[in-house]
Length: 411
Image 1 (tube, helix red, strand yellow):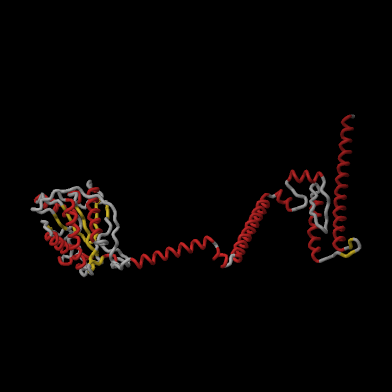
Image 2 (cartoon, rainbow, N blue to C red):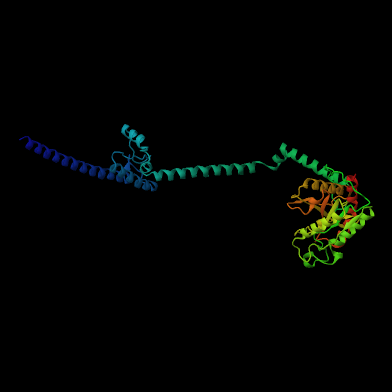
């Protein structure tokens, strides 16, 4: 009996649910139709007895119709978009609570989609940032433009910083002019002396009655202009470093030194192992002549491949072009420091007597047989941009420089 009553109650409630659902559908459709008609009447009718149909309000009708459809489709949210001359409703407490919970603004239907689709929110934020950036750029451009317009030439001239800068520039120009006028004209090839302290080499005991200087050539076939054959290597003595060695020997002998000049071709017929063969020559001569203390290996340098090679290859002394020279020191020797001291002292003396004749001292990670004496100098006289006459002229001044150095260091 009880079971029969339960079954009848379930059937009763089921019909009640069906009835309520049907009524809600009918009411919803009716409200949608009535509200739509109301919007159309407002768009085309009379408000307060006056026609207000205007061209720009036709666009608003479409927006309001869309918003009304959203309101009826999602009644729980009741999307409202306030228009001054359109559809509006007051906010309720429920709307405000739902808005806070869902981060949704009832006055802006766009926030409904942004709340449901996060990609739209990110895109909108990026566009807002771009708008801010463009606004700032426009402000900067306007400021710069106004600044340029407002700063007249008169304002610039009256600026204190500009005045001080112009005064300093005028003083500098006047100082330079006075210096140029007071300085006597010199030959452009001469380089001023730059004084710098250098250490003097250790004293050396020399027996002036016996040979004390040994001159030789590891690369004896190195040649000068006009003998450029064989990449500036020739067997013709008169155009090579051997001729330069001959002349240097002659000048040093005139100054009272006994000199041995060895002209063995260590780089011919094979260029390889030239230093090995040169070492044999050096050792042999030093064994035979223990009095030899000062060694000069005379070379010819290669000119750099640039437009100033020729101009920088010589200086003018007494109206003549003289080939410049440089000293090379191998840093793989145990006595490198003493070799550097000797080379720097020669250059300092050269700068004192003939400014610009000596180039800077060169260091390379080799030995060059320089370990055989603390008074060993590998001297490169001139380069392939020089002719033989210019290299020969160098020997006269180099002999004078070396004579001064030797006199300073001998006991």
